[in-house]
Length: 320
Length: 299
Image (tube, rainbow over all chains, first blue to last red; front, side, top):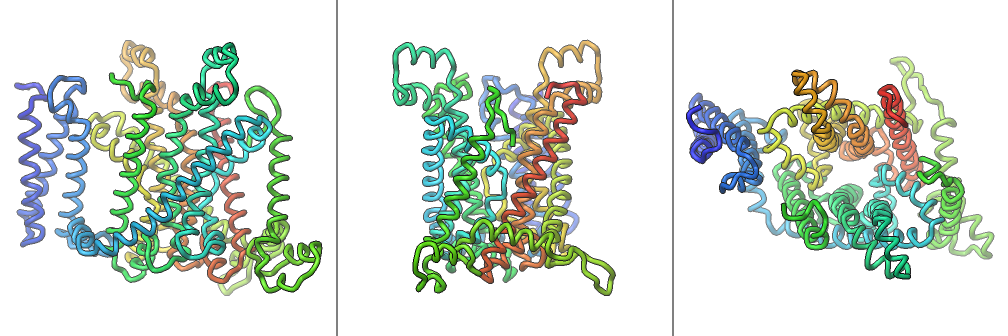
């Protein structure tokens, strides 16, 4: 090899050329098609793969901009490749849109139906997911404190909680829809039940995670249960609690959407998915799924940011 | 459920107490929950009202024994097989038939998902490009409500003529493969650096290092993620039965129960799903214990 594989030109040149070829292929796919399209697509794929191959070989700690950007750039390039292959294959091979619509069609649908998608988002995420997530997590946390205070409760509730965490809790959705009506209240209730147990189990585990030495120190200070809790054991439990928050964020989205399959007013993400699937309007379904994915991962990202703020002392968050 | 925790004190008495407490609260809640039903409007006397509330036909909240009786009647109390023109088939009135429909989709999906997940993890730990490009997406995919895609998979596969078991298994498979991939990538890279160095001094090839060191080191991670996966595989199969319009399976029983207000049917389907989940978990735990014992690990 004449140059080490990490030099910028060996990444940037094939990367940019690959992106160019990819755009050309997309244009050709929407236009005439033919052999030129597949040549361009193949070129784009090879070039992008080559760029990623060289980029992955750069040592992570190398003091260059490319090494620092690699954590985002490599997966971005990979995602771009997948998206472009999806578009070109769907359009070029004329895949039936029922099977899989191309990303451009989904994007156009999102842009064209913003009011509907916005109303669905408010109904599902703002009204059901977030209140349910807060109430369920809070209830799990409070019961976990009780469990911590009263050992009998902990020994009785923990095996049950662990067991219920493994059950298909989503099945209570039809019952709660019957109890709380078709509107967002029943969805929030499903979310409450689904998020309760992960928080309970994780908080109890977290409260037990403070070190013996530190606890002995608190005892030698004569600190009360509540003082020990606030000063030592809650901070020590924070990584566990945030873990539960993150698990619950995904569970809450799933719970609210699936609960809407069992009956809703005529708005909401789950409603949109189940009715538009019935009408074979798959672009709308995929648009809703895209919004749900964006909402879910932004929710998660916010939690990760908050976690870094709160548990800055934890080894996984310390500056390396 | 493990009945004794690490410090040796038995959990049986607390668990039994809490369970009994839940059942008592459930029985007591039957009256206030059902109080608005017409059968209870004119009833007088607390004992009388409770007697009615525990035996309603379509209660808002059925009493525990109603659910247990329904479970009994719809499994053991109903004929399992039925004579048709094609010979003996499973009787769709029997809940075990629906449980089997869901269980088969769960197991097929779980097996596909497990093999895909392990295969992908093996590819990822051996390829730097894949590790850096694919892994962030797999982790990110955990944050999206992936179950929302279930209806579209049913419809898309239905449009190419695939119905019944396969679409549900596909949903179960893609739900269960992510945790296995993540767990196995962790597990396969969990081998001690010293031992990896030792393998290198032996000049061991990649396949040998894999079978003798990486794979055994990954097994505890494998079983931990298999336990997560098999429960969500069951959830996937149940949710996969919702959009097809309630033909067969536990999800279909839930949906038809909610259409026709058959609360006892919903509860018994729910209990059956819980029993299935417990059995599947117990099965994975059993395989785990046998494997670890065969490898000489302490239980």
